[in-house]
Length: 535
Image (tube, rainbow, N blue to C red):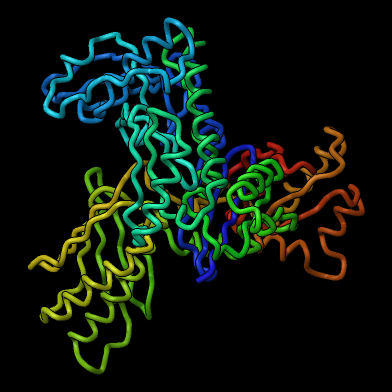
């Protein structure tokens, strides 16, 4: 299996698509404000709530009944911090934080570790209202809930995860060789600073000491930079560490030698990704490529079509069979239907098994693609044979081995329902595949579409003759592109002869029929949209 990564970035948002054997498997999309770590809060501050970010915050309210507290980290809703999320080393972190705030940066190697915090304590005996705490985001704001925080600070890298105040080395259980586990533990013990704990990740297997030591120094440097910001912080809450960009963060977890290409259509993001790959796998740096084609990157590599066919309430997957996927506040509900597929000649039971196995394959993909989390209940087609139900359960477990998120799968219940829990750390990816007419807004009556080219020409005329923009690109629906390209003397050529050959027209599959977008020569969108009068 080969994988390719496609990254599309513009001033408004960044989109990342992962394909395996040309099939879309993961898709993430975020606004540029979120990518840059900027979210405007009620008091006008800028704050970011991506998983991994660290804040110097204040305890807002203690909740003894929940054995938890709410922390003001800058979000419009206070962040949730449970007693168990304080971590065993909280007393050391709290004492260290007070010393740093009072006297400035302090080497953690010279700090005396305090005793561990018991698991059966009470929040009101450890924290008090208004107290300063150092917290890290473990779950982004979802729906009406604020971020969830922890005081067990960690800095993840490609090979290692660094954890202050723990002084323990753990090796991933997926590394089976006892000799390699012993080697890695010995190597890390020899290079790590005192009072830092380290988790050795699976991809560190077989890596040289120099590679591990380089990443160790980078991670320790991030901790020291965060403490410098803690010392300098005047107003609370404030962010003292921002997780790497979404593109680099995803690449850190996903990168493997089977990647054939990583295509990026933005030069700045291309440089970030190129630098990161050069650090972790210099021999593979040439797979990072800057996309310079005229078509949008997702259109050129058939990503847009797959996105539109894979999202939405109804998902077809195999010879007429389909799934209905719906999301409620508490859980996801999936209903499997055989549709109008041809019946299996072996009978109803064989037909049900065939449809269900296809649904298991597609559902495993959908969980990754939409990043569905929490509780997922799947209503498969009823099967009477116990061995068929076991086959379906084993197929689902096998498919989910490729999923990086923690999950748990239960066998089918007597009602034919399969229950799945999947780690949820950020809102699920939702892509609207239904297109509302941009001109009538669903009312159904508009001016003749033949007049649409006149509207476009008026916008081009305004750009060229009034705003003095001589070089730009117009993106339109592929059907509109076909219309303005037809004939011996097409409309597109007429525009170029009249307004100059700096006028370029590109088809874009993401646009609705009468939508259009203008971009300058730097690739930034020019806001020229104006609502067309509705009859």
